[in-house]
Length: 442
Ligand code: PHE
Image 1 (cartoon, rainbow, N blue to C red):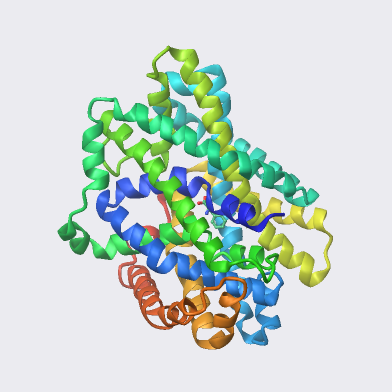
Image 2: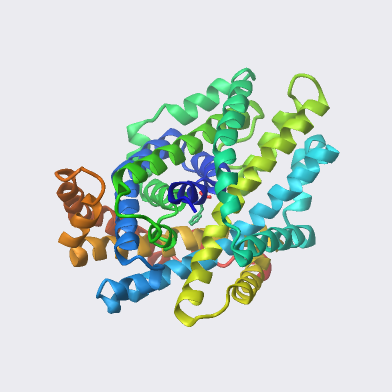
């Protein structure tokens, strides 16, 4: 399948539309936005290129890539990424299930009539486990049958559709009283706030940048193994990085003004923020309930495609690894692994606190650590080979050494700082943050 479409399909997903707005709202608005944008440009895109370099040079899926590059001892980097993919899909699928539920809830109107209690009812317990199962089954079906080509077409439709829907909703949100406070919160950064909260904003913004770009999951390594020598890695990386970021920021321009217009305290929406804010707005669309319901069906339908094209990339890395390395056949492997991921996701489906916990461990621990090893590997092990690989097909000869030096020094230093902050949180302050096990199932 077309690499760039697959990669954009993987990057654009619930991370942009669900995670970005509520993280922004929880982490100080514009302060988060600024650090996030810097993280994408200065760190995220160069790391994305590093994963492309590994994948295309090795021309095989993630764990085998390190062996094929003549550094078998580094296989564990691919392994941590595969584990991160397994881990992440377990709760990603829960949110995907909510999206499916909201398509139904838009058809019946139930989701728009009383958004808050609707979300409360469908996001926990058996209903949530049920929709999690449905989402996982669809994902397994696509990966098992190897019909990802269909996703190429879906991505072609999904990306423009997401943009149109978000622009339309953003325009509507702008007309609501109270929206301007949302813009002030989202778009007007204050340096002092950033500095005072660096310890929380930095890890959150970097985690979001990696998550949203799908780096640190071995996904982009695996996808880049399909690339030809004539493809320009920098052009592809920048295209993916920018389009993905625009979609996240657009979602912010919808959700934050809506939250303010609806009088929700910043940060209090949590994982439900989008699922409550959007239906509340849909119910108020001019033209009455049916218009809102129709827009809701299309909106959540488009988000479902975005979520599926990300979810299949997560399942695919795990399946591709087992199929490539052990010669397992595709269908049973996809079914077996998918079933295991479903089981791991049950706590997240049952209780939102668990979803938060899984998300926190994945994004603050697994992700930055894999990224750290990718950076070390490409910068200090591949070295000159990485420059050659990045230059092939790109015509950016003179920029490649600058990129490598960035990877070796500045980027490495920043990622080390992010990992250090997260480990500090884990080890030194064990009773705060994501590392405490949530109450209900303790
Ligand atoms: N980037 C995806 C999103 O924003 C999530 C994802 C992460 C998908 C890692 C694949 C790999 O929704």
